[in-house]
Structure formats: structure tokens, C-alpha cells
Length: 140
Image (cartoon, rainbow, N blue to C red; front, side, top):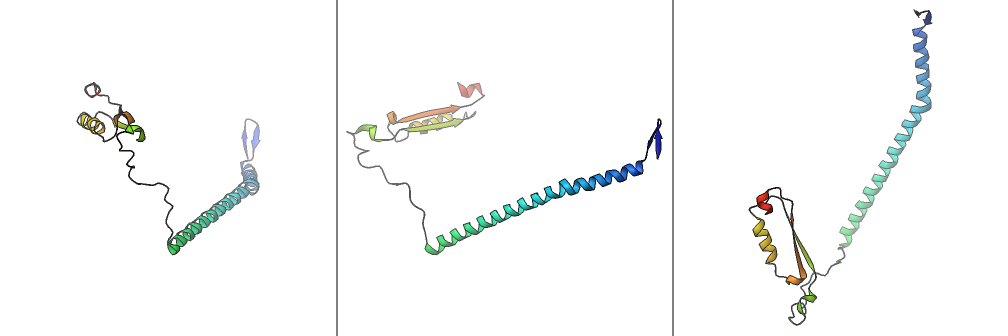
């Protein structure tokens, strides 16, 4: 027991009281929170296990039955109508060509020239040069 300005403090008793309060708090708060955290981890582990088993089952079924993915797009050449001179370029879809650049002094003419020389009707094609250059020589 120590005395501070007429105040008597028993540090040993204070320490025991503090330890007793911590044990009570641990039992009431910390232990239930840890149990909930462990339960959540177990549930998430079961979800992951279920997903892995399902994916494995799907892969097995695909292998055993030799299933192929459904073809959604028809990749065939454009019909002869598209190349018909009388129909004009209206049968071609509209195309946007974007050329990104950043201080590319050596290749900007080559890139723009290649886009301009594409075999596509000019009225059905838009060419955009996206230039973020900081060099004034390239920007000009």
C-alpha cells in the first residue's frame, strides 16, 4: 500500500481486481467473438469445398461426354452482296479505328498511314488518333 498526498492506494489489490475484470470481460466478450469467427471460417471453407467439387464434377461430365461449347458467332466471309458495286458501301458495317500515341515520333506516320490504307470503304470508317504527347514536336 502506498500513499500519495493523503490518498492510500493498494496496488496489489488493484492488480487483482483488474485481472478479475479482464477474465470476466474475456468470458463475456472475447470468447463468443472468437467462436463466431471460427464458425464463419468453417462455413466459408465448406462453401469453397462445395464449389471445387462442383467444378470438378462439371469438368468430369464435359470430358466423359465430349461436350463442346456452343458457337454463338458465325465467322464466315461477307456475302457477295457486300462486294457488289451497285449496293455501295452501305452493306459494310461502320468501323472505328483508334490509334493511341504518347511521344511516338518515330512511328506516328507509319501507324496513321497503315490505318488509312485499310481495305474498307472510307465512308464506313472513322479513324481517331488519340495523342497524349507532351513533346511539342510530335504534337505539331
